[in-house]
Image (tube, rainbow, N blue to C red; front, top):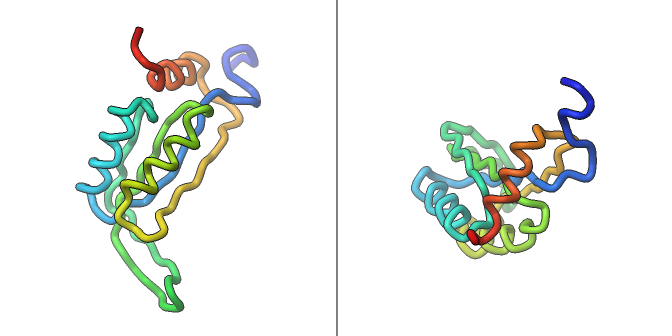
Length: 117
């Protein structure tokens, strides 16, 4: 890839990770985020096996991992919406700033989080 073919920081988009307990809650959250134009795309990855400590006890659970693509300026609203919709008391919400992305894709992500004109 030529240098001109990708972005360097700052990127106009973010990747947000969020684990859900089942496909129904994952798709419900994903659908709201897309409908509300807070996300351009949400990939639902079922079959994730999570091990974690919760309230002093080792827990094991099957989860659905969401990979949420959004515009940088939508992150605060998106996180607030996830927290409001999520069934977990403490949902996983991790925001990642990519170092680079295909420019046309990054622009598509930003465009999809805007009201249609």
